[in-house]
Length: 123
Image (cartoon, rainbow, N blue to C red; front, top):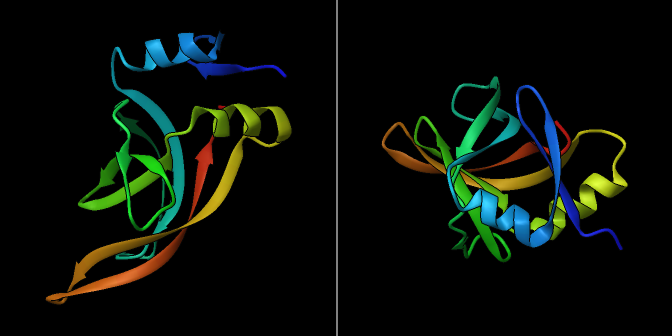
Protein backbone atom coordinates (compact mmCIF):
# COMPACT_ATOMS: atom_id res chain seq x y z
CA UNK A 1 0.00 0.00 0.00
CA UNK A 2 1.41 3.35 -1.03
CA UNK A 3 1.13 5.66 1.97
CA UNK A 4 2.17 8.93 0.33
CA UNK A 5 0.37 12.22 -0.21
CA UNK A 6 0.85 14.42 -3.26
CA UNK A 7 0.99 18.12 -2.39
CA UNK A 8 0.56 20.83 -5.00
CA UNK A 9 2.21 24.23 -5.23
CA UNK A 10 1.79 26.96 -7.87
CA UNK A 11 4.91 25.89 -9.79
CA UNK A 12 5.40 22.25 -8.82
CA UNK A 13 4.14 19.28 -6.82
CA UNK A 14 5.84 16.97 -4.36
CA UNK A 15 5.00 13.52 -3.05
CA UNK A 16 5.65 12.93 0.65
CA UNK A 17 5.24 9.97 2.95
CA UNK A 18 2.52 10.30 5.58
CA UNK A 19 4.68 11.51 8.49
CA UNK A 20 6.64 13.92 6.27
CA UNK A 21 3.35 15.41 5.03
CA UNK A 22 2.08 15.89 8.60
CA UNK A 23 5.33 17.58 9.59
CA UNK A 24 5.12 19.97 6.61
CA UNK A 25 1.43 20.78 7.15
CA UNK A 26 2.10 21.71 10.78
CA UNK A 27 4.62 24.40 9.79
CA UNK A 28 2.21 26.86 8.14
CA UNK A 29 -1.36 27.29 6.87
CA UNK A 30 -2.14 25.18 3.83
CA UNK A 31 -4.69 25.72 1.08
CA UNK A 32 -7.41 23.35 -0.12
CA UNK A 33 -9.61 24.04 -3.14
CA UNK A 34 -13.33 23.99 -2.25
CA UNK A 35 -16.34 24.44 -4.48
CA UNK A 36 -19.89 24.86 -3.16
CA UNK A 37 -23.10 26.88 -3.49
CA UNK A 38 -23.26 29.47 -0.69
CA UNK A 39 -26.68 28.76 0.89
CA UNK A 40 -27.08 32.39 1.97
CA UNK A 41 -26.77 33.88 -1.52
CA UNK A 42 -27.19 30.89 -3.87
CA UNK A 43 -23.91 31.76 -5.60
CA UNK A 44 -21.14 29.40 -6.62
CA UNK A 45 -17.97 29.74 -4.55
CA UNK A 46 -14.73 28.28 -5.92
CA UNK A 47 -11.63 29.18 -3.98
CA UNK A 48 -8.52 27.89 -2.27
CA UNK A 49 -9.34 28.19 1.43
CA UNK A 50 -6.69 28.41 4.16
CA UNK A 51 -6.61 25.69 6.80
CA UNK A 52 -4.34 25.10 9.79
CA UNK A 53 -3.13 21.70 10.92
CA UNK A 54 -5.13 21.79 14.14
CA UNK A 55 -7.90 19.19 13.85
CA UNK A 56 -10.98 19.81 15.98
CA UNK A 57 -13.55 17.29 17.15
CA UNK A 58 -16.97 18.06 15.71
CA UNK A 59 -20.27 16.67 16.87
CA UNK A 60 -22.20 17.36 13.68
CA UNK A 61 -19.63 15.52 11.55
CA UNK A 62 -18.05 12.18 12.29
CA UNK A 63 -14.54 12.43 13.59
CA UNK A 64 -12.09 15.29 13.53
CA UNK A 65 -12.01 18.06 10.94
CA UNK A 66 -10.06 21.07 9.79
CA UNK A 67 -12.16 24.26 9.82
CA UNK A 68 -12.08 27.39 7.66
CA UNK A 69 -14.70 30.03 6.95
CA UNK A 70 -16.29 31.97 4.13
CA UNK A 71 -17.84 35.25 5.30
CA UNK A 72 -18.83 33.72 8.64
CA UNK A 73 -19.94 30.37 7.17
CA UNK A 74 -17.93 27.56 8.76
CA UNK A 75 -16.47 25.05 6.31
CA UNK A 76 -15.22 21.63 7.35
CA UNK A 77 -12.92 19.16 5.63
CA UNK A 78 -11.79 15.77 6.94
CA UNK A 79 -8.57 15.90 8.95
CA UNK A 80 -7.71 12.26 8.25
CA UNK A 81 -4.82 12.41 5.77
CA UNK A 82 -5.47 8.77 4.88
CA UNK A 83 -8.77 9.99 3.35
CA UNK A 84 -6.80 12.21 0.94
CA UNK A 85 -4.21 9.50 0.23
CA UNK A 86 -6.94 6.97 -0.59
CA UNK A 87 -8.89 9.49 -2.67
CA UNK A 88 -5.83 10.53 -4.68
CA UNK A 89 -5.10 6.88 -5.39
CA UNK A 90 -8.66 5.90 -6.37
CA UNK A 91 -10.02 8.94 -8.20
CA UNK A 92 -9.38 9.85 -11.78
CA UNK A 93 -10.97 13.25 -11.16
CA UNK A 94 -9.42 15.81 -8.86
CA UNK A 95 -12.54 16.54 -6.78
CA UNK A 96 -14.37 14.56 -4.14
CA UNK A 97 -17.91 15.58 -3.22
CA UNK A 98 -19.55 15.19 0.17
CA UNK A 99 -22.59 16.64 1.94
CA UNK A 100 -22.16 18.98 4.87
CA UNK A 101 -24.68 20.54 7.25
CA UNK A 102 -24.07 24.27 7.86
CA UNK A 103 -25.70 26.80 10.19
CA UNK A 104 -25.97 30.51 9.51
CA UNK A 105 -27.94 33.56 10.62
CA UNK A 106 -30.73 34.69 8.29
CA UNK A 107 -33.33 37.35 9.14
CA UNK A 108 -32.60 37.05 12.86
CA UNK A 109 -32.89 33.25 12.99
CA UNK A 110 -30.41 30.42 12.71
CA UNK A 111 -30.96 28.39 9.56
CA UNK A 112 -29.60 24.89 9.00
CA UNK A 113 -28.99 23.72 5.43
CA UNK A 114 -27.13 20.93 3.72
CA UNK A 115 -24.61 21.88 1.07
CA UNK A 116 -22.68 19.71 -1.36
CA UNK A 117 -19.02 20.55 -0.98
CA UNK A 118 -16.38 19.52 -3.50
CA UNK A 119 -12.86 19.15 -2.14
CA UNK A 120 -9.88 19.35 -4.48
CA UNK A 121 -7.62 16.41 -3.72
CA UNK A 122 -5.52 16.36 -6.87
CA UNK A 123 -4.97 19.98 -7.87
